[in-house]
Each structure stands twice: as C-alpha cells, then as structure tokens.
Length: 328
Image (cartoon, rainbow, N blue to C red; front, side):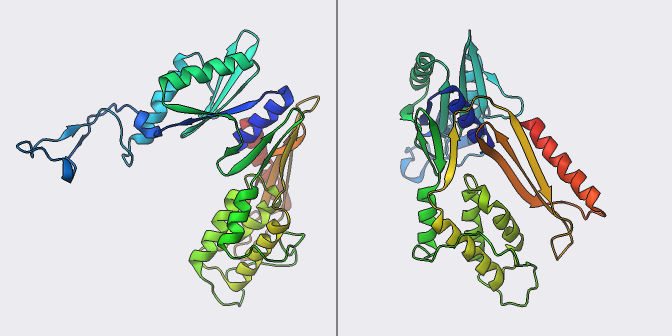
C-alpha cells in the first residue's frame, strides 16, 4: 500500500492523471515453462483414448505455477518495452522517454498507469490491450477496496464503502459513534479476568480492521494491540474492538487527501513506549513518513525482544525507522 500511496503523492505533485487497466482471466495469460499434464475431464473423455492426457501450454487456475507464469510473462513484456524494474519494489516499473516519465504499478490483474505525457500513456494502454486481453477502465476510481477521487487540485483515497460493509456484517450499522478508537486507560493482557468470546468472530473482525488501516492510520495502534489476542480473545478485547467499530462509524468518510505541494521533502517520525505490553514486557513502537502534503507510510507493532533500557528501546525503534526510510 505504501507504493500506491506514494504513486498518488507524486501524481498529485506533478498534476498527472492516474488510469487503470484490468486484465481478463489473468492467469490464463501465463505461458508454462514446465511440462505439465492433466487428465481428461470426466465429461470429455474421447472413446478409444481413455489412456491419453493433455499437455498444458498455458496455465489453468489453481495451478501452483499460475502466479509465477503470469508475472513472468508480463515482466518480460514490460522490460522488453523499455521499462526498468524497481530494485526495491517488484511491482513498480518506470520508463523514461526523453524528458517524459511513464510509471506502471502491477497488482495481479490490475495495472495502475500514470505519467507526464498523456499521449504516451494512451499509446501504452493501446499496446497492452493489443498484446493482452485487457479492459481500459479509464481514470482509476476503485481499487482493492479503496475509493479514489481525482481532481486538478487534489486526490482523495478512502474506504467508505468498505466501512459500511464491515458495520453491516457485524450488525453495528446503527451503533452510536465515538470520537476515539480506544480507551487510553485500558490495559490489555491474555488473562484479564473476563470470559472468553468466539475466536472466529473476533479474528474476522480484526482481519477486516487490518485492511482498513490502508487509509486509516488513526486506528492502526488500537488494531495492532488487539491483534495480539487473536488466539484467546476475551470480552474485554471484544469490547475494545467494538469501540473501534463505533469510531469508524463516525469517521467512515475520512481518508487520505493528497494535495499538490511546492516541494516533495521526506520527513519521518517515530516513537516507542518501554515494556508497555503486560504479558511479556515487550515494547510497542510506531513510525510514520510525510512526503509533501500527507503522511503516506505508517506502521505500529511490538518489538521482537525485551529491551533493558529506554535507550535501547529508542535505538531499536530508530533503526527500524531508518530502514524504512532507506527503502522509501
């Protein structure tokens, strides 16, 4: 998701439009490099050839080779077309033509296309549709559960529809909204003295909230904290999860607004507690990065080891943040 948000930050800064192509029957476009044989389907056995099998030339869905074959084919095509593959992000391709730039981001059966020259973008889309079975969806408006609005002055990414689906699924569409995603006085642990709740329902709820953090950094810490109790949730954990649900009910139209800015300058921030998790005394840390007008990269998680001092906590958090900065 960092790549997608970063792509929109650059597009907004440069006043580029972002387009979307959809591949039809994605994996069926992959060409097999291995010899794979399959039996006749039961209803297509040819009389007298019952002992024969099919040799596959292209992949079928559910084959283990399907994703690799598809990515290999489109990767070869893009590189042969003059694109350079990013060394740090396998789905990102860039092509420079004189002073113009064309950028492609590939997500299974969706291609996000943007660039500085609208004519080159259109030419690329036409070539792709001739070589592969694709549909031109025009300006990107809905992608991986995210709603995207583009205008000359800004780009806005939200998950309004996704939030409504979550609330409906867990029968909380009529709940009372709250202004905070969690009660700061709550201290969570595995053994909090309250009764156990349905693990499947709790895991499902936290899983939905996990994807909502794609455009909601405000619920990231609370969701990260509750995800530590997926195997043994209690009533206290479920109540905390429902507080997050009440919060997103009141903020369902929130999202990431990307404005054009004068200068793109990267700023990073991090923070950490010390031994804040009661069960194992490990610390929780988080970071975020700002580029231009918005925060576009964020994370919150528990550290892997028990630190012996606040200095050690800060050093580990700073190291992780610097690693992310180098990747960006």
